[in-house]
Length: 295
Ligand code: NAP
Image 1 (cartoon, rainbow, N blue to C red):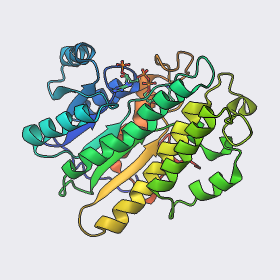
Image 2: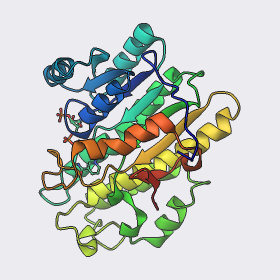
Image 3: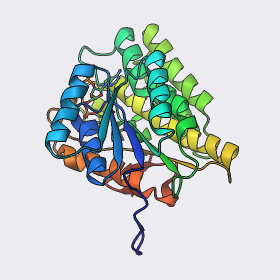
Image 4: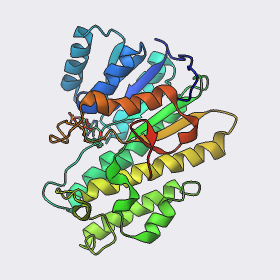
């Protein structure tokens, strides 16, 4: 944030959209943004769970929250949200891609790998691409896109050094390369080659649960954020400014991580801070505890 006091640029006319926000970290991100007086669109794939979440926020005194369904895995659902946002607000200032799943409970298999990568990687791209045109030109300091990633996506967990070299080359990484990385993983899972030394074996880093597919999905979104930043700089320098960041919330106690040690308030802190303060030195990078982390 720097030493100088920063002007508060946001108001009730600022519009933020949060995915997977009926519970956990996403719900808390909505609450913290609403507390700032921002108009927040809480989205959830299940209308009943979404309505209950809105009800609970209204009971806490927040009237500046609104609901729309969004299943991030359905392009039809993403398009419907985009159309509703266009007619309701004209545009948005902040997008927080938070929805995510962790399902490696039965080890790695193709069905689970496809579903985890569909939600944690391909859906993040689809939601972002579809909502990008709605991000406003005149958001002070630039509109913001935040992706909730994870330290499990840091490259120290990836044994294949060729991948590490290309993925860590922030300035040249492309979306096509990240797609090919993810598709190769899926191909290796399909052929039974995923445990031959190329892909994360997090048990070697002290993780008890076999969370390889989840780690691949988070590596991919962190790299995607860098690639998107590069694309936006190349395409829109001087025109439309959009700041993108990835963020690890830490090990947070939620349904996804029942043994987590942080509270949701702590977990939501950095994504919310990035959305509000958009630190220029960190564009396209991974943050945790309001600090740039190694990828
Ligand atoms: P959570 O409590 O399980 O919440 C996940 C949210 O994502 C739920 O609202 C869930 O909706 C939603 N979701 C899943 N699939 C969806 C879909 N297809 N469309 C729309 N929404 C969908 O987990 P959490 O811990 O808050 O996780 C939030 C994010 O933080 C995830 O991206 C996760 O990977 C990341 N993260 C968490 C931790 C941690 O320690 N908790 C650490 C690092 C990163 P339903 O209720 O309908 O299932």
